[in-house]
Image 1 (cartoon, helix red, strand yellow):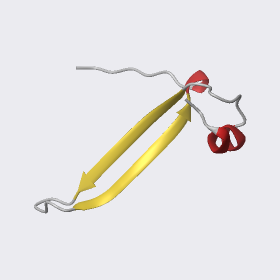
Image 2 (image 1 turned 90 degrees about the vertical axis):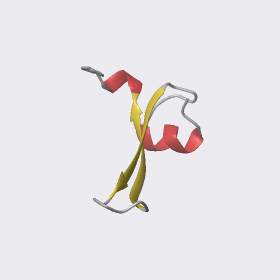
Image 3 (image 1 turned 135 degrees about the vertical axis):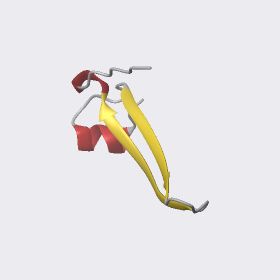
Image 4 (image 1 turned 180 degrees about the vertical axis):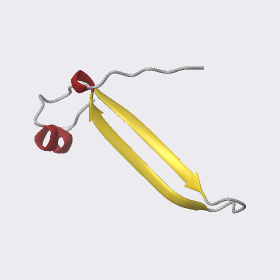
Length: 52
């Protein structure tokens, strides 16, 4: 749920639902992480489709 900082930046009401995606990427052949990111997206502006 959105906190004050996210609400201000995303222009949404407090405690609005968010989609949170965390990624951890490694370089080929290396065990230490090369990149870590967290992405917060307004739940009312996204459609999520997953194929498996």
